[in-house]
Structure formats: structure tokens, C-alpha cells
Image 1 (cartoon, rainbow, N blue to C red):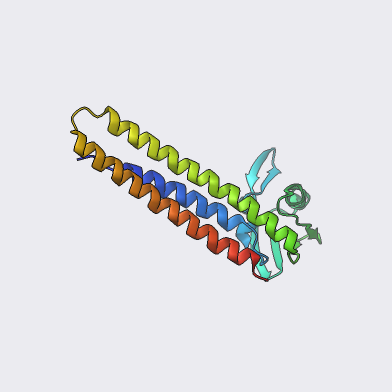
Image 2 (image 1 turned 135 degrees about the vertical axis):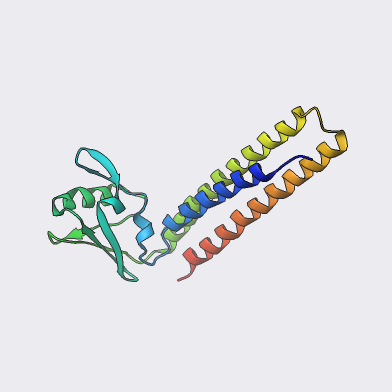
Length: 181
């Protein structure tokens, strides 16, 4: 019988990456994961923001960033401003950086949902690529009979649908959360 464990594992990895991407999507509430994609140029190299500073949500509308080295404050502020997809404007007092999270307008909410839908499509393409690789492996397997190949293809399609549905459900939850006032 054809083993689909490896394909299932690959699809789980795709869904896991997708869920990590969805954590970064703004929903109107301050959350430290919003800044997880920010890279800061410090000490001559680019480093993830969480490796050069502590990020905390002071309340629903404010993130507070405390750099490990106060000399990196300007670089951190510049990196946050440079990420236009977030639309954030940090302010610093020489020791900490405060990032107010502005209320989302209806237009901005729709734009965020549109950007999230692009991430959905990327995840689905990755899942379809795993499916195609699995189907090719089934087609070239000479030791399997035709009926076993058909069953294996059906199982691969079922797994693909299962993971595609997980992505759709997560996107629906996230878009509902974004559009909620």
C-alpha cells in the first residue's frame, strides 16, 4: 500500500507556516506577533526584532518595545516605519519605543483581508504542489496495481482537501476577526 505519512507531514508544515503568517496579520488589537516579521539592521547585520528587544502589549492599542541595547532604538524605529504593510508610527523616549496601534478604517480592514487572502492562495499552491509530487510518485510506482494506485490517489486527494479546508477555516476566522469593529 502507498504510504501518505510523508505527504501529510509536508501539508501539516504548510498549514503551520500559514498559521504563523496569520498571527502576523493585524486585527486592530496590539499583539507582539504583529512585529515578528520585522528585521532590524544592528551590529552590521539584519536580525529579527525579537532578538534585539522585548516586545509587550501594554494594552489593546499599544505595543512597548524595550531594546536590549539602547543604542539600537533608532534602527528599531526605522525598521518598523519601513514596513508599510503595518502602517505603524513608533515613538521613542530614549529608553523604550511605544508603538500606538491606530484603529482600523473599513478600507484598511478590507485591504488587510485582501493581503491575507494572498497568503491563503500561497498556502494552497504549496499544498497542491505536495499533492502533485505525491501523485507523480504513485504514477511511477511500478509495483502497485491499478486499483491500489486509484485508492492512493483518492487518499492523496482526501488529505489535500482536509488541509485545504483547514486553511479556509482559519482564513474565515481571521477575516471575521479583522472585519469585526
